[in-house]
Image 1 (cartoon, one colour):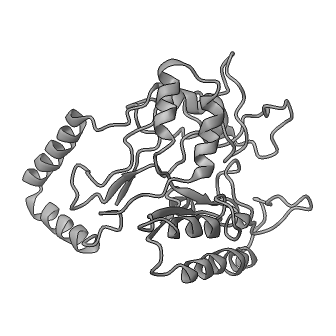
Image 2: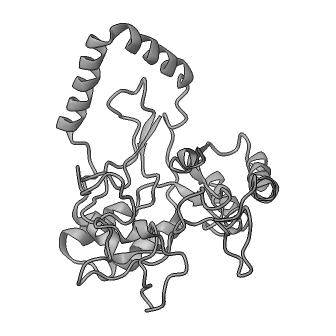
Image 3: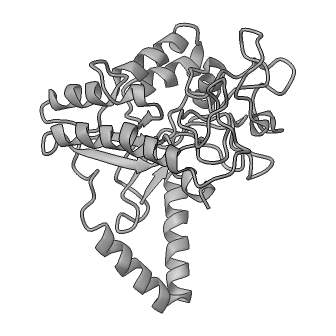
Length: 302
């Protein structure tokens, strides 16, 4: 189990738990670590959702044009860009300077011992009141996670992410600037949300990242998010992703089309998953790698 701490530094930042897009008042959470509240169950805290990359666009883009992939979820009461004085959000995956500076302003990068103790106490209390069920659950989880892939590894820091942070550092001031400078050396997951991010030589591709990580001594652990399901996980129009079950004439997804998405799934397998598998085969036993299936996409398939 991995807990995403990329943006969970502020408790109850949202007015509604259903809101997810560019949340106002959020902060960066604990830096990646295996020192979790219960290592038998939780392998690591890790920045899975990359701090500073937009979740999705506002109705109007920063250049004043209408966003073609606008999702009403990005116009929620909790979303940045919906209040006077806030800049509009760019498309998903693009750098959002206003967001990263807010995340840095509200950051909690180091362990808050009282929070960890509270989590441990909660687990203990639950165990006491549900001893039989909890013991069985814990034993099952311990067997499933007996080998923690993060344990004892140096985490790969993507130089491309450091460059993006540098853009915001240049115009930041005070404590926000100091926090952003600290974040430059923090690892985060890399999202494989388009086919173009699989092959290539730069640190903006899976292949390039693995080549760079393999050159380290020792090779550093790389974490990728696997995410390019057809129809952008069947729900989030604002999200990245490029495969459709049925295409409109302009290349966008026809969400109203009926069918079993056979063609979209075949495209997903042959041009995305198979390509990822090919790269992984090249670096098998050369670089420690963790693949995470984008969590929100799984329930959206149901």
